[in-house]
Image (tube, rainbow, N blue to C red):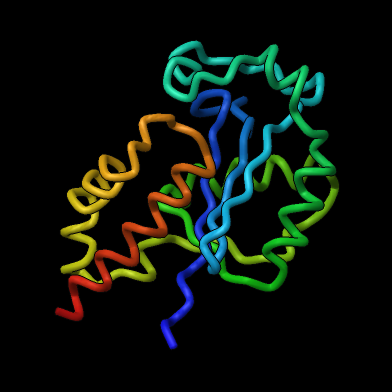
Length: 166
């Protein structure tokens, strides 16, 4: 029986730095399914970076029209990820944005966000970026969105590990 793949999470944000906030959360589950949701920003979340928008192509208007309330996003994340270790390739940023999301909902995550680097040997880490680019190209993952990015991370992990075993 094949080993289950780790769960990966990715967050798109309104920008970087102080005042930025999560606008889309996506994850790739151990069975290969992906979940994704736009976050409707509360009124107090005002920061917006046009450069970030040019990368993820999510407008603030789209978030206001089709985003889910923060409490709903937190709810489905906790339900899907309860008790699991969940990995991120940008742990520092994703941790801060996840904290902002949960703080707004006045809750704490029921899963553990961990760094991708915990999963990789030095050799695997050295090959990571090249393999990731190959996987993204093969998947035609040009759309920079949270669930796509999480799936690319998960498949990259699987390929890097498989290469290590050969």
